[in-house]
Length: 364
Image 1 (tube, one colour):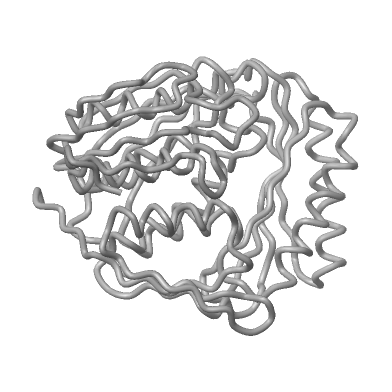
Image 2 (cartoon, one colour):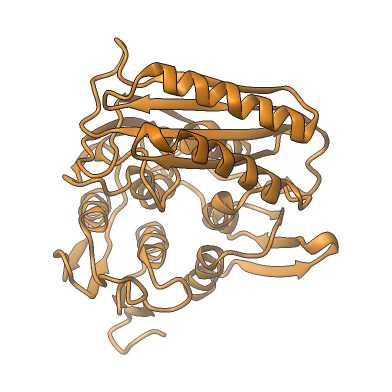
């Protein structure tokens, strides 16, 4: 809804009622130079309003599009964001909690690919935490798929951040595009291997990661009759700064001949839960591969904004739409002229089709 002052008002409590509405609405606002007012922010969460992670994202967005921002404080349930000129540069943010760096990137990356020059980010917070994709998902799954749109990034992770202390660090370079290409992910082809990592940090012995990797590889290979290559990693070794909190996790990626990547991930806080961790990964992988989808539930919603900005028609095959995906589609329809349709097809899968707006980078 557009008010008399020309500001688009969006209810932050619809669908998933979390930070997704804030992230995607602010990204569109910055890219399309459309002022927004978001109310009922995170009304669906136990503690509503802005958290430290959301506040960090808003402050960086304010800088790179020279916006006027009001209501930006912890706990605020309403903000007004009035953008100006989109720029590029070097930006830093320290969430100072275990708030997710990956979710912060979801707001920033779609904007900065339309900047004049390379942008560099130094982001501190949680890199591997519950209720958000780990940074490994960003580097190993999202980025390879984003390359199909024409997006290029480089990323280094000097330190991992786990709950409760956070303190992880991600250095990300984002390179400008002229225009995004449409993508088609409808047939995933044949499964040829399962890759991934089993990792420990914060003083948990490396032997725990090795044991979890062996057990996970054995179970996945037996279940899918395929080579499984989950590799153990000690994130506190000589190439990283020691993490401030303990963490033990596994991310497994099913790799297909078409280039599709289907991933699952889990994390626990202590080594005593390593057997449970392996079982959860095995069960999650079976559940996600039972449907002939081309993107996993984490990736669904992240692709909507890129499809909407691209030039041409994109199509992806998914499982049942997540609340995050429904939210992304709703905000896209409120703020852009992209045409999105969702069709239920065979075997419980859905095809999301999007005719993008063909946004061009006027700097390129």
